Length: 252
Image 1: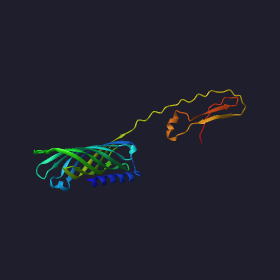
Image 2: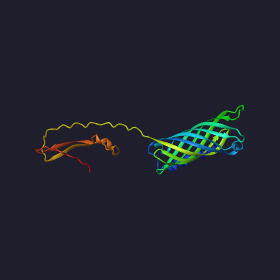
Image 3: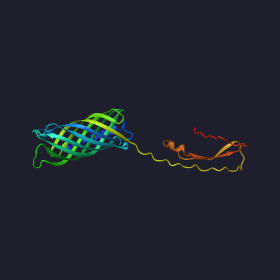
């Protein structure tokens, strides 16, 4: 079990290092996934169980600032037939880190590793101590194809380890719905331009002169801010006998 945990950890590290050069989702993304699944027992579990089947419901939240990484919360319900005619059912819930990478506009690959708790009960037979629960560990990966703006279909593979009960390798059919979450835009405070009062001319000159030019620091990424706020102040002196009208300043 420790080897499996170490393998999953290093796989996530490798994915993180290679994903920074690929496409990433620019918005916070909430994905809801409902899938039918089948699981094949491995190791000693193969002596007691047959192929199982069930359903999984999960949700993943991928913050845009985390560069394709996020959090996954899921729940499984599976039926595990025994080698005899009887079977048991297992209900589990788990949570853990998730990874989602968009390759182009249609294809998405994902991976996850979770830990949680399960509860099981018998089906078709009564046995003393036939119920119980323990920890469950899961890891999986898959790919989906975007059919519409918010809908995608795909396939996935996973490994489940139910402590003291069962371990198996499974395959699932994925049906995912994506809900982009946009942050509310912060209001921009408008600054009222300072009132510039005309001053009497006590000096001689020619034409129109610009005096006392003051510019505030400019930030190109906040260009919308300057639609309603000034970038600085300037004092205009007119030495002509007629009014100076329609004065325009241009930055070259």
